[in-house]
Amino acid sequence: MADKSPQTPRASASADACASAAPSASAPASAAPSASAPAGAAPRTSASAPRTPDFAAFRDPALARELIDAINRTVTSAGRPLNLMEVCGTHTMSIGRYGFRSVMPAGLTLLSGPGCPVCVTANEDIDRAIALARVPGVTVTTFGDMMRVPGSATTLAAEKAAGADVRMVYSPTDALDLAEREPARQVAFIAVGFETTAPAIAATVLEAEARSLANFTVFCAHKTTPPALRAIADDPETRIDGFILPGHVSTITGLAPYRFLVEEFGIPGVVTGFEPVDILASVELLCRMAARGEARIENAYQRGVAQNGNPVARALVDQVFEPCDAVWRGLGTLPASGLALREEFAGFDARRRFAAELDELTVPTREPAGCRCGDVLRGAIAPSGCPLFGRVCTPEHPVGPCMVSSEGSCAAYFRYRE
Image (cartoon, rainbow, N blue to C red):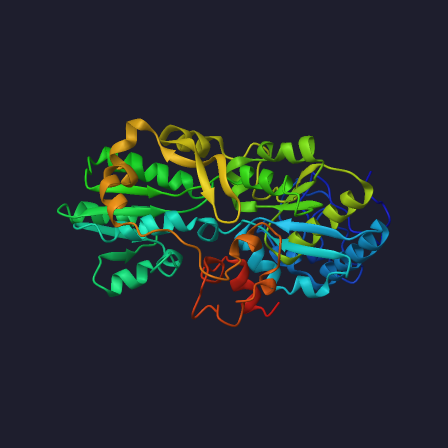
């Protein structure tokens, strides 16, 4: 049962983290969530004001301070160190931006997990994507982060500088339109991501089929989140007392895929948003459950995540993709953790269409000497525990992908000097 003390912010499965935390007595009424608001609704300014969401309460300093105080009390009462892990790149950046690690009690560690899709992409996949840029007649398209990710010997950006046709796009449909405009070129899109972006890739493949674009392919390196959570929960070298579960991914998956954390490992999880109060309330709730020996999967982001996620988006993904084994940086090969194009869409699969060329052009895969991105991604060390961090490896001269991506743990630690 939740602590009913007026000094302790509360959180529950039936309301957003902010809406379930007790407002500060000094906070204005407009910043306090309305008791009569629907579960998961954004706080509103007042009963007479226009019904426009007011997100100011999610950044209310008084409410944030109250939550920090509650976290301190809860961790003290736990009587043992607690380790929480976030597994979303946006949470990684938010925690760094708001300086939360610096205000957490000594007995609480906030770890960054495999929440950055570029970071978890294995070197062998990056090497094959780079090799694709060397295939005559192929134009490689990708998002900006992938341009600078180091492979075993080079990067896509370096291949572009050397004359390869590599272009940065803002969406997969940009690549599709390019294929339509330049029918003499083979246009391949490097698809890296989690459940959040998989529906857009699936829709793009279906659109390519509808337009009869035989010169468009997808190099798919998409992954799904639950198998990585399972691997970390089962890792004897890490002890996780609770997971801050990804908000964006959960808009697609819903809560059901996380139930195994409770049923098999007794580890609680909270889906939450990205504002300061969102994150602090989820941390307080996880600490409270861990301290009491409770394990539940809670939805503290009901304004963005439905219990069942987005069935339409999942059906679209299932129509185009099927599960496959995938190699994760730091976690190895995880069964059924990747997405591969189904046989009926094999014509749009760059891995299959250019298999012979990729086998010939891909360099032998090797990991960068001294780089510990893999250990960072599984929570074994903090980025500062890598001997290259901030010395040899910086955002200007990254050695590993965790320093390249805008969602990478090392990039966040470096940027916010954690």
